[in-house]
Figure (cartoon, rainbow over the protein chains, first blue to last red):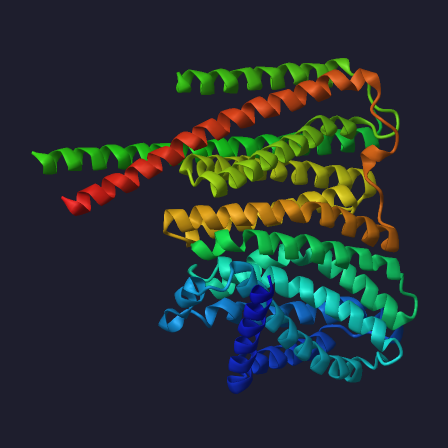
Length: 223
Length: 53
Length: 226
């Protein structure tokens, strides 16, 4: 168990180091998030009230799109030079590889989200500093859900044709309940009338899909 | 019959038609696929027999 | 033998449906509140129940494939998903028309319809992904994983939609207001039975197609090697 966790941290560290040196998916993700934020501000002409109403929904749409870019790279970066085969053949248990990669994606996506948040606040004139810590909790829980399912599907689609297209098509329907919960909570927090018991959805989603991912990853990685 | 009743019947007709069309459409797709598979199978079987001779 | 079973099931199912029509249109009294459109329930709900049943079969078959690695289970899974998706489309179409009459809008984000839409999207992804993978074992494993993830998502979806609807006050599901009067139960149950029989016939046809496809693949390989 302990060696498994060490292996998971090693995998996570490797992914983070690789990403930090090239910053390719980080750059792509942040740019994409910014572009969407700008596009949405042109798409609708809203007054202050309406902006507050759509704030949570908009923010998580942006995060979901940015997240797909990051998780897509997760297993795709192992394809050149047969790195994926080597990883599977290593003594690290399947769940350790899975959790390590999911954790790396999680940290990267949270970074992208925290960079986008002040810009979102700027463009839409929304004050997010008031409820920052509850917001951070929602971001953490929902992002973990996105990355855990995203990493599992990244592994599933790694050898599929049109991977960049298939991964979002498969991922987003599955994420809908998580995104609903995150959107409701975020809108509530930004408006000052959140119902914190909604966090149950995020917790249930995270619990179900983390365990499912850990349990099924060995079947996925054999393919 | 009132106007509401007539509208209701119209929509009922649309509803049932939609359901039947979808089901019949699916059966049609199944039949078409079956024909295609049977054709391909017999073609390949005759090719294999020819090659074995 | 197999052909006879398929024909038998298909004919029996069709006959039941036709007999049901007679009951639905000529025997049953009209619902006082909703009028004639209420009769659509005899297709709308049985389609949903049948779809659920077949999706359940698909998930069990997927799990069986992961455990046994036998392709027959993969064939069963894809057949069940296809037929289930077809019935879900019937449910969505009839539900939309019913909503148009009931509430004046073609779509209402109420719990039942949205769950059905979710199921449709999830398993549509399953059907879209299969052609994208050419290697059979890979395809079967991926499909199985997808089916299991999709099934695990459903309870969470129900939870999330309930919460969302409470917040935004969308109309509640139509069936929840009072139960079904006893006079409506026979055609309702027969409708479910008819759809299950028809669906099973379709699945059997599809299963045969899958095994023929595998035979085609092995013949192709044989041809290449001769």
